[in-house]
Image (tube, rainbow, N blue to C red; front, side):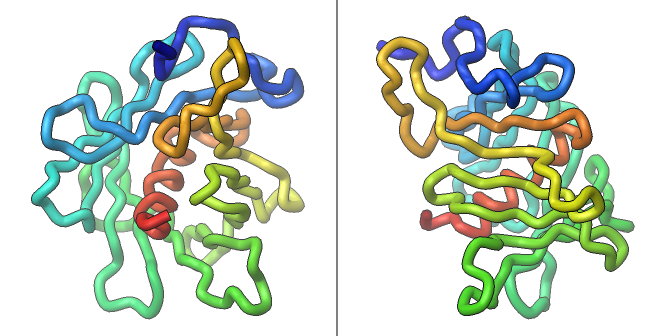
Length: 196
């Protein structure tokens, strides 16, 4: 049986996986705890890096991204009483001064590629485009001429090239972006496009 994260060398394009430039994470849309919904994230060495554990009967309006030992890194919360789907990212478990705000694109007639915009203090930082349902998204830095800073791609096995499905995918994070921020944006995409 194929493992979610076998201990084989990276098999993605050399340009994306240069160890000095990008971190390649394996994201498994499954919690390590029984009766929980969440994510388990491994690095290229197969070591646990991040986790998200949400109990099935709890509302999904408040999600905490933790490190491997369970310390809160970022909190993702749905903004109450907003037009459209809007999510706020906070440092740790604080509830004031969000570091990022992500807003779902609702104008699909004129802009079909864009899934969401991410801003900080009313300045757009990132544009997320692609298809989360196909696990094919790019996070583009608006301040650097839309340079790709992170990418979500389907994960395939090393032997045979068989895809794992939608629950296991790669998150490739360039050095310009913190991996915890890229993972928080992945959590937001999952909440925005949950039925996908």
